Image (cartoon, rainbow, N blue to C red; front, side, top):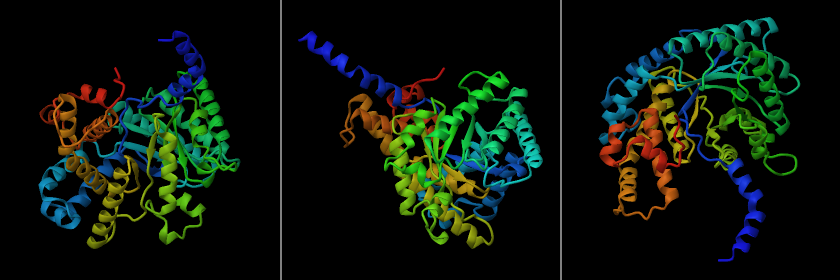
Length: 416
């Protein structure tokens, strides 16, 4: 072999090698929540999570009180109906909300400065109380107003007050995340990094400990004036702090002139935006999150059932497109979120497990699976395990691996 040639190749490709490992580090090795629940800041209290859970259980009891009833209403397959129903009921008691976002943006509106100051302090104290007694959702945080000129001072002030309350109470966790609304430029992401650096210094926090999501709800976040998408540059400008790209269904659709009656997570403009988001985030470790439906399961029995069917279909559609997280805006959406998600993983488990077992043991499954496909199969099972759709005991029985082995197959780094 020509060692001179290999030395030359290493020299020529060193920058590309470095860029690949730096810009596309792969899976972060952390769980992605299946939803983000938005609660307006002025309505968030210590008891809010419990109230959401009780309301979700109550609407399920009232409008889907038995497996047979819910199977008829939502068309659940008979071979999975009982196990899915039981798991959803258990989830609504054990962990009703996976990711909580206390909203100081559209859900809160523009208020007098003194009023938002009080709301920021009060909401921060309430969340700190939940964290310190161990009842906060595993992921939690706030959404602040954008860094556009008209709202940047208010957004930064709210962020500083809120984080200050958590820091003072010793309640900042790895699950804390900030959502930055209505991002329109790479410069705003660079500015957000400056803001977080400043907040960390002022509160004595470790550098880089505060992380944030980019809310993609403006045309400028998808297509820049130069004809390219700025999303990859936004992720880079985040300097390792960006954890997610969240699609904003209604702001984005309205910005493109879509009539209100047709604004939806499944409108073609929504699909295009999310396709771009998925491409930009691929390999970076940044999560992609779908938006919400504004058709709420409230009103008559027929209205609740119709809204559940719509929500179930939209959640399933996102999952099939490779988007594993979405927004929920009302407690009555929790049953349909978990039903759709759990059914997705329960229905897919048998085939995924058989293919993985054949891949691991060298058997046959009817598929010629390559390492990348095996990683996707393992990732599918891991996601089902993390949200409660699947059990660890099933891994050993059906696949012959434990969670650590599954993580290795999924190319997910193990966390200590």
